[in-house]
Image (cartoon, rainbow, N blue to C red; front, side):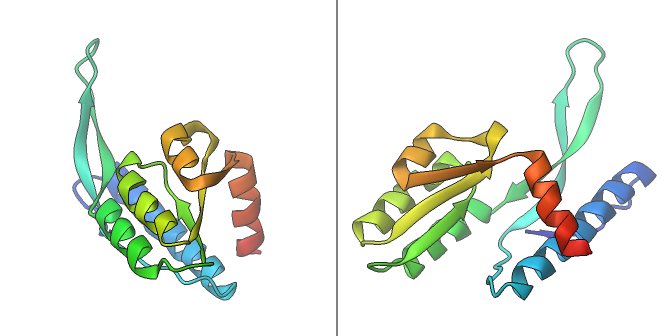
Length: 144
């Protein structure tokens, strides 16, 4: 996704700046391995859920348009004997994955252990979860 620097306050500017920097490093790491990175949708700052106890409402970043782009790309890129990796936990991808598998592609779901969507994993037929520590280890190797 793309993200613009949010300058409404210092905390949001720092959070958005850190996310932009992390995305650039991660994209470079994947690209250096010959992995094509396609940016789709945008990450936008939105008001979060209001706490029922104290009334505090923290700004959160939410993706918009990513699931539709990913579903279209999956279907377009699917062909017999091709392997596609879906790094997502979004159940909205289920219909696209069904079509992709009918076309003969192999689909593997990659997701954080806390975000595993069993419906999506089962629809893909293969899945692998990772932990924060595993992702950080890979990321740290990329920045050395």
